[in-house]
Length: 331
Image (cartoon, rainbow, N blue to C red; front, side):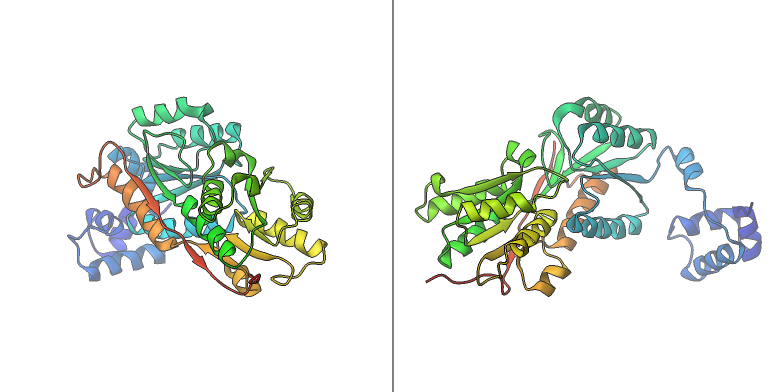
């Protein structure tokens, strides 16, 4: 197998220079670095990051535990994070908990055994608090994202209460009163989006009795339930709380032979390219800002950045309402 000595001989440099080139060490010139990289490529050499990690007692691995592999928003976030982390010399270990405490435990155990230095996580429940505590005792830094279940850890979240409030408030300003709000039932244990929905109703003179909140099951086709709720509530508008629910809602609308926005207005949570193509209004998020906040916080903890607040940081990102052609004004 090709090793660093072979690369050093090919590039006519020392073995230490080869090591510095792959660490982005500033003590070598860009020309020397290019020569080393070219020699490595010609020989088919790849640095042994695992061996380096053992020597330095650092793995340079960051774990990220997401909840849903099919969520377009999460995939876009992972893309932003990977770019930022790779630029800082870290690698990403990705896993999905599927909103299942048992899978969450498996993911956390895998990260512990992989000697991660930090973890981004969407926590599922408090059932696995013991593993989070073990990570903390082992100086594995944790940043909760999207959802906060453990107040003692850093967190980067989106102001979903504000996002739902903006969506509801806009629909109310367009004359809609029968507005269906959809959300996964497990999120209602810590209601955020529905809190924004209710705040908008109350501020516009409507009581909680006027609310139409539909709690849905995770990882199933909810289109029939959404269709029934729209009909039973005589709804003129719907707010969908994530990408998968949006797909289910669009299926429900089609199954009932309804048109957007003539028969029903729609605001979707989490924007993406196909919503733009369909002309559906959406709550959108500054992905680059979110990714930067997450990476700077976790890497800052790992590298002991004294500028970070103690004992933890709670960063909340503001969403935006992006209006398209999916809302009808009722006069």
